[in-house]
Image: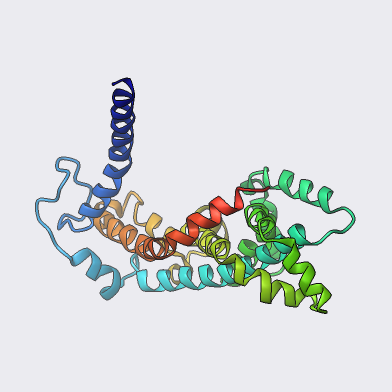
Amino acid sequence: MKKTINSILRHLVLLLLAVVWLIPILWLFVTSFSAYKGINTSHFFPEDWTMDNYAQLFLRSDSIVQYNKWFMNTLVIAIFTCLISTVLVLMVSYTMSKLRFPGRKSLMSFSIILNMFPGVLSMIAIYFILKTFNLTNSHIGMIIVYSAGAGLGFLICKGFMDTISVSLSEAARLEGASEAKIFWKIIIPLSKPIIVYTVISSFLVPWGDFVFAKLMLNSGIATDWTVAIGLFNMLGKSMINKYFSVFCAGGVVISVPISILFLIMQKFYVEGITGGSVKG
């Protein structure tokens, strides 16, 4: 009886947390179909429903809403960052997991300590470095910065590779295989779950980032913005009453690709996390 009561209480608490978490998302979703363009706090659900906010995003670009361009900018940055970051993380993880060299443990410890410092502290320095090379207000500069420190996030991926039997690598070396061949032909095919985890994690960073994007893309040219900057611009005092429902529609659209990607890859994503947590 006691176990049943405890189980009911736990589920009630989880239900309450789920409701608290889902209500803002539900409100954002239903408001995106509101015919009233501003913020309507008197009703949770819109009084009049319409698809016009979505049509305005994609079909009626103006000086404020240029969603097609923002979406493509964000997608290009996210894809290139994802590809470069994934390759770097996998290579560093393989090096730390399967190779033995002087200073390996010290380098790992230094990397972990370095990861503890918030990246936001270095943004001003990064900005001036990029400005020196004329890479501010540049998507290439953003891809470089997003990808540059990716290798430091090797810990989970390394933990997964630690679970792959060393005997496979040793047998390949005895057959004369190079480290590159072992990496691409043996380790990578056995690392699909952690590759999926790394791909999704690398894609999410530029996809939803606002702070660094706002710092870098500060020329005021709307066509260069990412979705996060463009949507934030709609919340200005002079525009929020005209574009809030459009802002909600943009928020829904930007969440769709990553949600679909996560649902498709969920099995591998979970396997990657659990496999990578076995060994550190």
